[in-house]
Image (cartoon, rainbow, N blue to C red; front, side, top):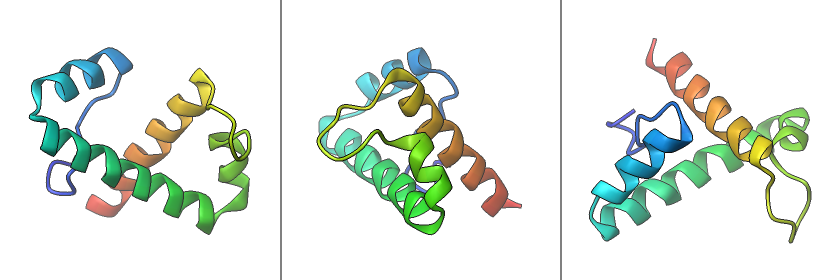
Length: 81
């Protein structure tokens, strides 16, 4: 995951701590890479898109954010094999 530029966190608290420990420039890059991966997953499979978004202009719910993190991590684990 680190090679992909993604923070290797499994919970929201871990993620917050890791992002806060990073320099601002690297934090921004990691967040952008994460968004790029989950958007790519949503484009490839429209069923996943409904799990990750409520619609345009609507803030994501806590469960949607969790779903994004789980799907991105699972995608990275599958690709690393």
